[in-house]
Amino acid sequence: MSDLIALTDLTVAPYILKATALIRVSRKVGGNQFRHSMATFAILLDYKYYDDSVLLKASILHDIAEDIGYEELYEIYNIDSDGPEVIKLVLEVSRLNNETKEQYLQRVQNSSKRAKILKCADRISNLTDLHLDTHTSGKIYDYLLQTEKYILPLAKEVNVDFVKEINDLIKKRKKLC
Image 1 (cartoon, helix red, strand yellow):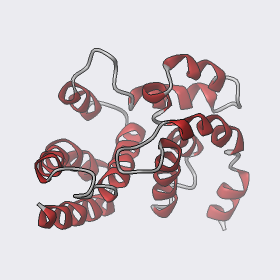
Image 2 (spheres, rainbow, N blue to C red; image 1 turned 60 degrees about the horizontal axis):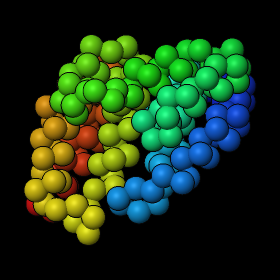
Image 3 (cartoon, rainbow, N blue to C red; image 1 turned 30 degrees about the horizontal axis):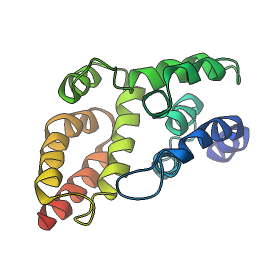
Image 4 (spheres, rainbow, N blue to C red; image 1 turned 180 degrees about the vertical axis):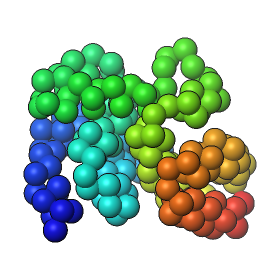
């Protein structure tokens, strides 16, 4: 019953409306970043993170700074009482302009528990979208190695079920390569 109450009290419509700006950002795998954001949100719901409104709201906007611009974050501040914490979490999982991918992933290793959870859900969505018709086998294999090196340790810290799913996705994607 507490899950039902948590979901009933969750107001995400303003965050979803803000995230519609991501519709214009296409993904190499097809579709757009808005759908990816909603998939990340759905993964967190699937893992029953109902009681963390900041995490759920940030999942909807987790790519907005990188894909649309950091100035978009100002509007989030006053959406509701979670706004400032949502921005903080979005920034925590956003790659800075001067960071290499490896520097970014190393920084996430030292981030908050929420950021680690969000990064794992984000990576699950990304792994699900890896296919040979959009990526070379070499790119897929490198991405899987990166996932093993940086994301699996995060998953081990925050949710054993993430570990199972990520390992399963890695195993299936390695068969493609």
